[in-house]
Image 1 (cartoon, rainbow, N blue to C red):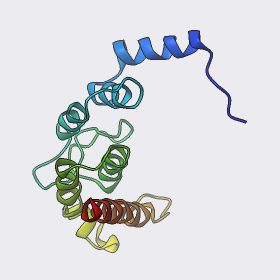
Image 2: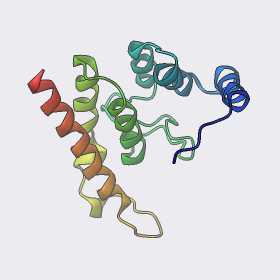
Image 3: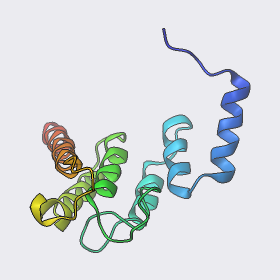
Length: 140
């Protein structure tokens, strides 16, 4: 059985998001919980998109590089996946998947010391998200 957050704790979390969250996280929160605008999420997400189509610029707070990365681009695609289908959303996903961070063979990328192959999994996940969105768009 799922636990529900007590109303006072939910309100504390809501106030934190309103006052302290970055604009992107605030827009995502408002979209998810307060019928916020999809266009506001896309506008804030665009702030992290690089000219090559990939995402960086500190989108993932633990990876503050400005260059496009598979991790940041996958995070952006995760955000897009949580939104209703739209032409603008699909265009953003297409541009992101065309980025160099997804086309460069894994052996040529800088790998983490763990050698976990997470970039490969992230690329596969991003491709799956794009495929689902393209199929939804084709049916609409």
